[in-house]
Image (cartoon, rainbow, N blue to C red):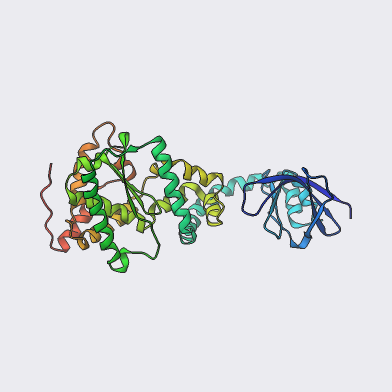
Length: 360
């Protein structure tokens, strides 16, 4: 058998560091010679120990070595020659004929739609279950770093007021820890409350996947009622417990992002989310997510001895603020509808609780 030489780059196990090299195949043996070393090729393995990714257009081919390293090359034809008359080689020849393009073009939109409707929700749930806690903490940490650099400033709320709001948050967490199972999941979240001056974001609060919750100075100043602040914080805790932010991130990343994150290889696509904190703020929660968090908030507020109509008070005031040119950010990421308000009222009526008169 003649020697097959394929130039490319080799990546160390689970690393983005690469070295240029030449992969050589002869007599059912694979060897690698590094371009930056003047030495004979080193024996790596037999061919049946390799795993070669199938061809996908003009994308670089990957050859997975048994020790975990990955060889990538632009020489697509040479990779097909590693295994004479193999399946992928026949596929590549078929692609060059071009006749397959028309049926693929016709079928692709239907497949894409079916894939989105059927597989994406399944993969999102699967990805959430497999996402390690350290990945959630990394998202929180890097998002806050990015937000503090580009979007937010340090809080200007007085120390006494921050202590007061922190006590509300701690009281909610205590109730959550002592609550029935439906209010506390098996997931370990590192809950923390962060105070920020948001400027253009206006009265706002949001939750990150790992348990980091941010509340803005503008919201605290606009809503001095502790029941309203408790309702907003309980709502954000609900987003964390239901992992809504992680679901939105997975959907935003798409199929490729879900696969890379589940596999533990963040890649440049996920790094964009980790490093660009404002990207997470742009992910609007669905109305289903909002109703779930409203229901969670309602139950948690009752357990913590707060008025469960705090969100109604909040919605009413935010509806007025929404008319201002720059203060509607909360509504953009937390869509409000009559269904959410009536849902809370129905719960209060079923529990025999009378809503308070709306305050100014």
